[in-house]
Image 1 (cartoon, rainbow, N blue to C red):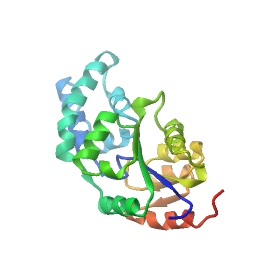
Image 2: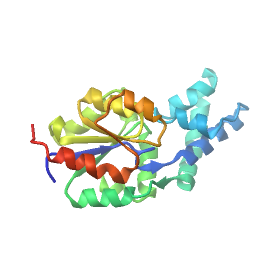
Image 3: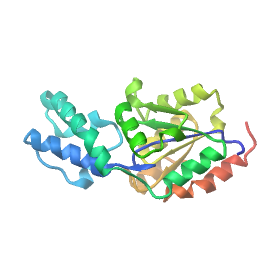
Image 4: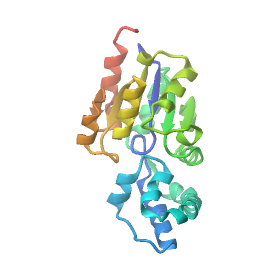
Amino acid sequence: MGNIKLIIFDLDGTLVDAYGGIESSFNYVMRALGLKIQSAASIRRAVGWGDVFLLAPYVPKQDLARALSLYRKHHKHSLLKHSRLYPHAGALLRRLKAEGYKLAVASNRPTEFSLILLRHLRILNYFDYVLCADKLKHGKPSPGILNKIIKRFNLKKSQVLYVGDMAIDAQAGRRAKVNTVIVTGGSSSRLEIKKEEPFKVISRIDKLSQPLVSLDSQVNR
């Protein structure tokens, strides 16, 4: 381990594929409220901002509180049925932990459901800290969630790497002034990601080693 001491991970689309669970719960709500069923592609594009922002464009304002309650009740079960780690994600976390890196999660998903996922997929113990947007005034792309994690570990920004999958992750990393690696295949297109100019863009989570080695070799500032 060199310059980098802390690696902060986004959850959905980065380490975990829970799109099936999100789609199931989303369309359960649509059916319950007599609203239009949405395609998997449409739902996927709306993921990443938290469940309130996921539902709000599709549900009348007066029904949003009920929709959110229905979604969250259903989601506790659909997550367990339809979520999985991306290939190589578990092995990567084990290796990083063994090499002495501090690991954290920064997710716009509510805390309750982030912990359900982390426990169900048996990766909670790899993380030294989990922080979700419902514990803050603003979620990503605000840099607050990253800044709070970094402050907890009392590290320089140059000692931190953030890994996400969306344009808003790249925005949050840039605003927090931390090097950010984006894994493609999530909710954002490669073009949307490139516009935000992250440190590196990779196609799979197991390709994180190359940018990590590059940053670890830098002189600590």
